[in-house]
Image (cartoon, rainbow, N blue to C red; front, top):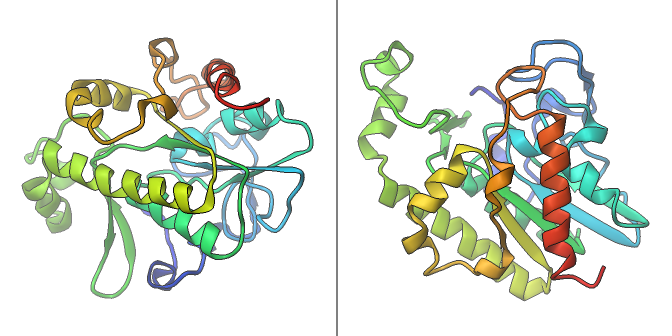
Length: 266
C-alpha cells in the first residue's frame, strides 16, 4: 500500500502530512480508479476541510479507507453524514487509506499538540495487524493485514523481505498488544484534554474484534464502543468494488449517531 509521507512528520510534533495529495483535487485514489469520485484534499493531504477552520462544534474523525470514504462522494460518507446532524459544526477528517492503529494514536496526539482541540472525536479503528514501518532511508511504508489470512507462498509476498519479516513476527497477541498501546494512548489524551471520544470497528475487523472480545474487554471502555452487528453486512458497493457504498455509510452514520445521542447532550 504505497502512500508517501514525510518521514520527518513521524519524528516531530508536526501533523502527519501526505505531500502527494496536498491541496489536490483528484478523481482517482488508491483502489478507486473509476474516475467518478471527486477527492478534494486539504493542506495536509486529507479529504477534509482545513484544520484551521473551526466553528461552534468541531468534530475530528480518524480511521482508514472506510472513513476517508474511498469510492463514495464526500457528502455521502459517514463522517459528513454525522457532522450534518450537528448544527454549526466543522469536520476534520484526518483519515487515510491503509492506516494502522499506531497512526491513529500519533495523529491524534499531533492534532492536540498543535493546538487544535475538537469537541468530539470519532475513531473507526483499522485492522489491528497493520503496522507503520520506516525503512533505513526514511521512507514510510505500511505493512499488514489487508486480508484475513496470509499465505507465505503467495507471490504477493514471496519476493518481499519486509512482508515476509512481518509474517514471521505477526500474531494475534502481538496485534492486540499494538492495539492496546494505541488505545491506551488515545484514552489518556482524552482524559488530559477532557474530550468525548467514541470508537467503532468495521467490516471483517468487527469479526476479529468479537473473536478476541474476552481479552479486549479487560482494557477498553465498552460504553464508548459502538458495535452493532447490522452495520457489518455490507455489499462493497463503492466505485472500486472493495469498500462499502453509500447505503452502508448512511446506515452506519444513523446508527452511530443514535449511539452518540444516548451518551451526549445533543
